[in-house]
Amino acid sequence: MNTMLRKSVLGIAGLAFTGGVFAGPVAAHADAGPVEGKPVAVAVQADKPDTAKLIPHGVQGAQSKITLNDEQTANAKAIIAATKKAGLPERAAVISIATSLQESKLENLGHLGDKNDHDSLGLFQQRPSSGWGTPEQITDPEYSTLAFLKGLKQVDGWQDMPLTEAAQTVQVSAYPDAYAQWEQQAADIVAHNWNS
Image: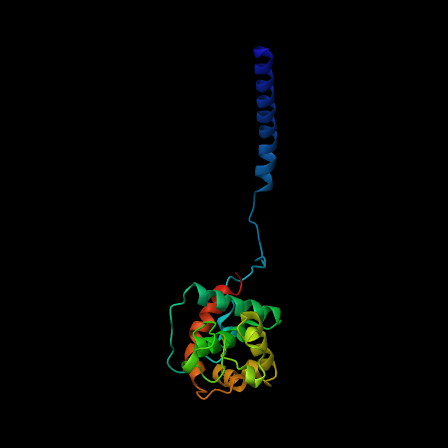
């Protein structure tokens, strides 16, 4: 039995060697001469959105930055998910996150008692008395983001506006220029999480 197995193995090895000898010169001959090639376009999904889409006007003024905890990061991701659900581009997510950074530091704030600004709640400090929704709705990150984005879509030319102007038109804040300071961090958050 061992002899038979040994002959079979040697026979297969011999066939492989013989095939290699005969194929070798043919393959080598076919390789002769220069090969001209053209670059091939390869579709590659970008890991990060284009900066020109995120910050089309460049940042305005001094920029602020905070270190995000897990809850704040989850809220930023919820804003990005809601932006995608609304079918809006990365720029809308940058505007939304910068707005939330200014309004609540990306914290889903409930009623703050005496420290509360009127009846403002949630990531965007939206007010039930101003028609943004119920307290339960406003403190839902997806709902509050979609409500903000609905307001943003009603602003003619929001895509071409400086961030602070677009955010202020929706929010009607007492500090209209404050949103600009968060544009770089918002863009970095979107760049890091848009395709994840």
